[in-house]
Length: 468
RNA sequence: GGCGACGUUGCCAAGUGGUUAAGGCAGGGGUCUGCAAAACCCCUAUUCGGCGGUCCGAAUCCGCCCGUCGCCUCCA
Image 1 (spheres, chains in turn purple, red):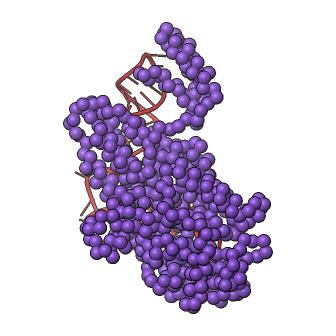
Image 2: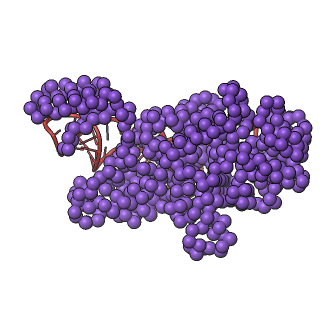
């Protein structure tokens, strides 16, 4: 399988380190391990659907690797101390930990609702201070960092590779307009590893005085601690390429002296709302909770997966509604009760399977993979209508939709207080229909439709549901 | 200014040198139904921002132009 590596700027054959070191060429190691690190959140507000896009993407990466026979070790950090968190906690007048705990819990509730697999390890920055201090200390000892007025900075001029991920060089960066020459910095691009705390800020003791970690160091410390010196996949949004991931490489490779820190860098394109990307700072966001109040998790996943993950995606209500309709079609097939007896297997199951795999093998071509599944669904419906047994193709469909993390469960309708009254009207209407009083029956149906209650007469009775 | 992307049917969105340009939604036709709805089936771009070029052949490669977006220490 091929994956696009931001570092090389091209698609590369994916080989896990575990396969390489064990000399495995074709399946000698039964379940080679893939070490995967995904950048997590800064918990001080509810996550928005741009986050959903990113985590759905890497959830599918993980599910597909597992489908292909890898054993994935998935680590995702929670950066629970930084400027925005401190500012928000102060504004609300609550302890830092109370704020971060609340939004971490809510974040994972959102992830669960989206059917995103939990990472195996979820380290928090504030619980990894000793490792962070250790890494910082070594970087100073090796000459890659220097303390200054209680802060510690990384010395970018000492790292000849600096800029290799984001394809920049120090000169062009310095030529940029937004660089501030921090007090005590040797070079304007030097970035902070350890920040001296100001009065009233949370702090930890360190050899350089009380302070807290800089933004990038926690990811280096955590991935070293939990995954080792070289990891296979590091994922995140495209907006993290610079400075975050660039700085992680600088820190990690300087610390270990080993290259590469990450074998494959994967970055998802950003979600746009209108003309701009969706982000906390622009305030143009829709939270995952808001989206899930109106749409199913499957619809959100289909919306995300019907595009190529590296390319920006534009959010619209219409697109999400279209995805919901598509989800309904797949659900319909998943709920089918096969009744046919004919076994004239007209469906090329291995063909669909290999088309799906070929699409996914090409840098997680979920759009193509989904298209294959819609084709399969159509075939299943056709054969089912013809009276053929579709048990096997149905199993293939649910197996493959599962790789994309779709549940295809029927949508849950929120309970309505008015339900007993609606039931009463519906049964009255049934009586009228039996008596062939169709004008009266249709009148009730029309009125209910106006009130947002949809009526469907099916062979097994009348069902109704509230339109969301 | 530097770096990186994108522009495909009414909408969203795949495809990146060669038979009929995926798929979803919308739209049209049909099956089912008392009628609807839902569901299902079938159909729906001679054309890929514009102009040149390379090639037997380009949406796909090259050049220029137009338009849009992202990053350049808040960010998935």
